[in-house]
Length: 330
Image (cartoon, rainbow, N blue to C red; front, side, top):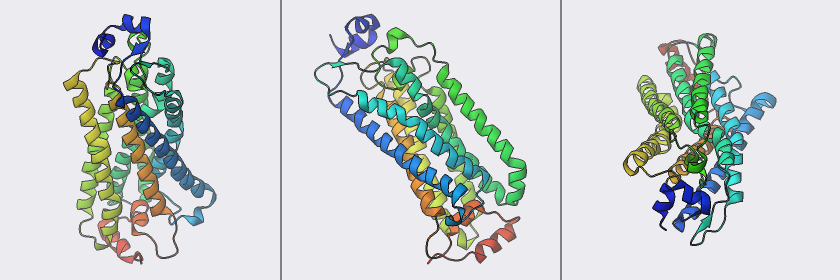
């Protein structure tokens, strides 16, 4: 019996509980799980470190009064990275060395519930970067105090709505089709109805919006010489990261579904989900390392990046003057 027969005949799989997979696939998925688990650890440590300093030792930060959306960005990454870790641990612990045939050691409902924060993280976190980019653009015209007073609640409400949509997008898969998910070993395999489209659409819309907003901010700051470090260290980094780990994987995942149209449980049908999750986790780890290097005080100078990200003058002329008055990094 070949794998296609097994994948398209749930009753056969239900009776045998045996699924033939390519020998390399379990090893590849295990590698992705270890990368994601390590990335979540880095994200939780770096973002948690910044949150701890902000509340307990703010004098160690270059800027103590962070912008509202930057705070949201830090808290969201910290919380989601911790909540997403159990799924990766479960995948690693339950992994077994494959033979010619591999026995399914995973519980579909355990996979489904443990992957809830992981997939919501995947679909929601780009919105925090989008809101941060919007705030940067708004702050180029109005003071930070005005932004805090009028935009903080709006941005919080937008994030809450996006979080709700992605959560509901995962929960609408319930109840799971027991026959279809019986042999599932990955998170995306358990989403038999909507195939992660809610999360994919959310991810790709906000990832593309992040790129557009970052480029717009570059254009707004083009005349300010001392903003070069901001461009190089934050905005261009954001554009590249969103393209590589946001836009490109989403398009690949959507094309993967549409072109191959693999049945649920077929070999490789759940691989795209693991790749997408790993890209998101790796993205978060890189952002954590970047923001620690940007916000943590050093022995020499004050970072233009930290000031540009977190402080806002009241008008374009004041913006230029404020940047000109910033100390240079040695």
